[in-house]
Image (tube, rainbow, N blue to C red; front, side, top):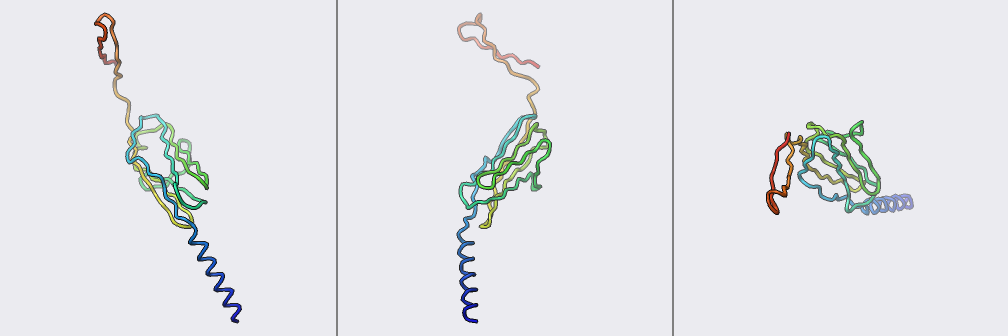
Amino acid sequence: MISFEFVLLVFSFNFALSASSVQQPRLIDLPKNQRQILGSTFVLTCNPWSGSPPFSYSFYRDGVQLKSNSRVTVTETKDSLAQLMIKNLISSDSGNYSCTVQNRGGSDAKWTVLQVNGLFPFLLYLKVHSHCGANGVRFLLKS
């Protein structure tokens, strides 16, 4: 019976030692605010700067987990990073986006706020007229 308790004690010590050697992941900070134009592509990269792989990643918009679909692509590599890509942005894509990474040692999360803006109702053209002098500049508004 003594030898059985000794083996059990050694096993529990080894398990505790191996679990404590797993470093909790830490993510690189994200910009707090991002602006994009309607129809553009938004890319969010979730990149740990420390921690022990393998990692698992999750992306969220306003607290709801995002999954790949026709406009949204979630790409993940267990050892290095994950990426969220949203094509053809629409106004309702605006919101709080977050990325969570986790491993056996714990987890970390970072967030950013995306604002999707429409195009200006007019385009601003800069026209340099040689007849106005050496550096004459005139701004024209065109719809």
